[in-house]
Length: 175
Image (tube, rainbow, N blue to C red):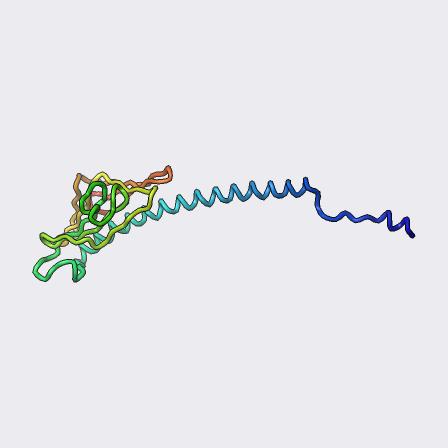
């Protein structure tokens, strides 16, 4: 009977080499997964910034078409003239709103001689917004489009080593 107990031996646990191999494989898979998550997150941040620019263009156009005015934007004696989308750079209106360089854009309502900012959008660094035209204006009477340069107006959103563009054509529509 004592010999039988010596012959039955149980191997318990894993060797150090086995554990090191398993943890090394897990670390490599986690590293690849984390890198993919970061790349995806950056891609989505850029896509969202482009979607926000398109939305701001459409908002200015819609407000001009429907003659929408906030009560505080125009006085009772002034009338709505236009909505202007301003792409920041060295624009004084942007600086007054706390947006510097190419890190944002504004929508202003123009009521005769008075302009009021109704929307401001900052983009977080390292994203930036630049444009071939400093501003885009939609007239309130018929939503005709005009810009500070000849159309099409190309808005470039860049960051994280990538660039996407929004083109505002001669009709004021985004592409």
